[in-house]
Length: 325
Image 1 (cartoon, one colour):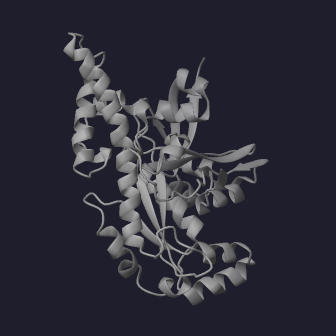
Image 2 (cartoon, one colour):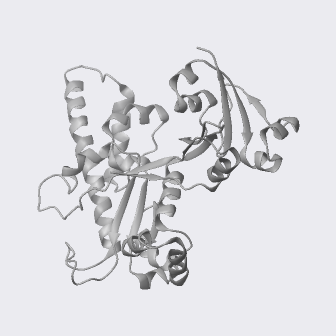
Image 3 (cartoon, one colour):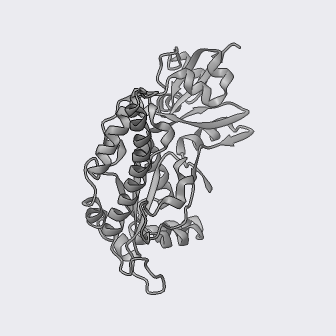
């Protein structure tokens, strides 16, 4: 597992403004799993050995699109659209095996007159099974919030967001990205996952270069931003995450929450006591603080707002929690 700090120019400007004792960016954790190889038969798919990966929020599916005789391909030939389709199919099969096993147990109970412990679970599993059998992911099963909650414990692979990374060579980086990823996108039904083209080899080289040389190398290849920065941004997008900030002389820090999180829950991301004893939140938008230049000036201009329990914290909000425990 690797923890990656989230680059955020807003947080850097806040650090320069407050010169705090401690500076804490948000972070994203990535787990690098062993490559999945084509299964040699059996009822389950090729992901049976990766059950530990169920406890994550999203999946990055990496498929190879570069030729290199020194790196053998497990399907002999390089074909990114084929591999993406196959890997998605393995995810579907793994989930279908879990659904069928659980439904079989529930239906045996029904035959002897026992009602399901949770009707929402049974209805959700029936819907998910229908979607999977139609080669659609569980997230496309049309579940209600209650049904999603009822099956959350199964941690289905296809209920999470996917980012598909097409691992290309330098030559492909110079081509329009749309033409590179279009054949892979075509393998997925609507709603399609996020698909991007990156070069792992190039990114590894960039990581070893000084900033000026890395910038020059990126310009030469037509890369707008480092691949890691792009992956972090896409991770936030597919997971519906935003960042809010707390500032002061002791620490300037970014906190990660789901979009539309209410103020008390956002306070809970800082500390459970703040959520339990929440009274109100003092909030100012990042852009408003930058315009005012200082917090006292922002207060004088009425840019600092007092928000209650129903306020939904927005990306870039600077928040101070008032609480009593």
